[in-house]
Length: 253
Image (tube, rainbow, N blue to C red; front, side):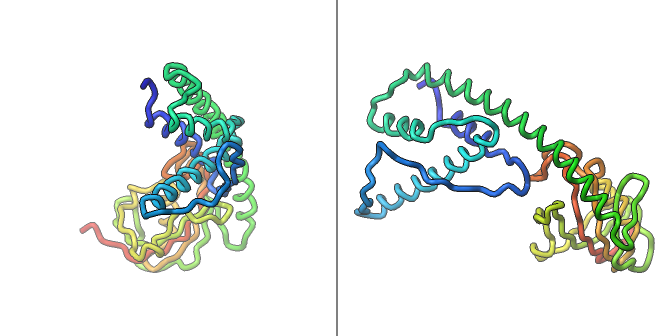
C-alpha cells in the first residue's frame, strides 16, 4: 500500500490549525445516503466500543471539515464515507498509487490554504489589538510607556525595587482582548516562581512598576509578547492582558 494512516492524520491535523483563539467548534450532521438508518443493536461491549470509536472519529472528521471550509477547501463528506465503506468491502474505485498521489496533492493544498488563512488572521489580530489598546488607554489611571505597554497599578506594594535579575513569586491570569482566558495560575492552585529576565518583555517592563504585595494589569502589544508567530496556543500578533499579583520578592543574596 502506497499511502498510510500517518499521512491521512497529518491532513486532518492541518485542517485543525485554529483560525483564531475565539473560534467555536461546530459538529454538523452528515446525510448518509449509502448507509442504513436502522437503529444499531449492540450485542456486546465490543460492539459498543466499535460504535464509540466511530462516533469519536465522526466528530473529528466533522470538526476537520468545518475548518477546511473556512480556508476555501470543500470536500464531500459522503465521498469520504464511501471511501471508508469501499475499503471495508474491498472494492476500491481508485488504485493505491492514485490515492497516494491525490493525498499528497491535498496535503499541499491544505498547507498553502492554512498559511494564507493564518497570515490573514495575524493582520486582523494586530488591527483589533491596536483598537483595543486605544480604547483601554482612556480608562482612569492607565499609563503608557515609551515602548507601547499599557499598565494599571491596583496596588503598588512595598519593599525593594525588582530588576531583571530578581527572583519573584506571583499569581496571574492571562486573557485575550475578547475575554477568553488562556492561562491562570490561580486555577492551577500554585503560584509561579521565576527570574524576571526569563519572561516576555512586557512582563519585564511592567512588573517593575510594583513591589512585593502589589497588583497590576498589563495590556501587552505583540512586539512585547510573542510577535507575529503562533506560540503555545497564542495566535500571531495577539495583544495580551495579564492580571498579576506579586506575592514575594526573593533576594539574590
